[in-house]
Image: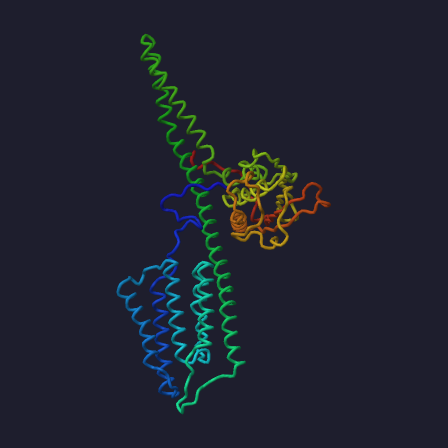
Length: 452
């Protein structure tokens, strides 16, 4: 599907945004203030309530570093400032280092707050790219190991050194390491799927909006052709009368003839432009054969044969932009990967209309068959000469599936069985509509409102 140029007021396509603008500075500042408050309360409670001997001065100095950084952020930058990926990375790196330093002074991994090592890595996994998260996670693993080996032991009020058995210490270290790795991978995968779905939905909305704009433009052209019909007819009539009166003046008669010819040309141009824009029932519904051929029309001359098999009775169906755009994407995908032939078969199964699109290409990879229709999925590899610039991200299939499901259709994907379908050995897309969702309203087509 060729991309239409974006207008200045349209959002950028997914993947075209400038990097950065990930998180608001105010969000990270708020999280840091909460962490600072919790650290101060924990230090004071441990020192004066639990009577644990801590290097309180050094600990408060480490906490004070976070306070200073937060105050600088609050007074220099607006709260609504959005940080770039690099800025978010270094902010989380500072928080991770500050936490590790504080734990070094308060017992290391015997301190139950060592679990907070997971927080910066989880935030990074949800907000940053995989490379940044990998670096931050590696730093976190190194810091956890350093804290486990070189932390200042925690001393109780009576001078007793609080120490855990070596097995428990190793277990705490291993649990935190596994938690960092697991939560980092898990959060990154979930966030990546959410972002991919959001981008794909945005692309779907843009594609549908563009199709609707083209439909509206057709209506405007039809209205213009209708309204300009009278003045053009007047120009033609007057020019004809001038030609009769200027028989004795050939030069002037030729000018009048030119005016008449140009008026005829304007009429023909407006008539051809307005044929597809009339707002009557004929443009909102049509025979199934016509709708399928209209959807396939851009791909009928690409060197692949497209075969249509239709029911004996050619039903009149809805001619919605979603249906045309969705079917066009499915047929385009089949033509892209077919060796020589694509079959578009329609049949009735009870009160359902079943449309099946089959090609004779390599089919879908079996291990990805259950994920067809998901956005940004590398599903099938095309020959670069056959489809230049193809990236195989599955966005076209996702758009088609989303648009068709909005019309009440259900889609399923499979690979053909050559022994059962002869030369139909490629991919199969089956689209099923309930009759009440696809059939057009019965009755006469009605009058064209533009001509009423």
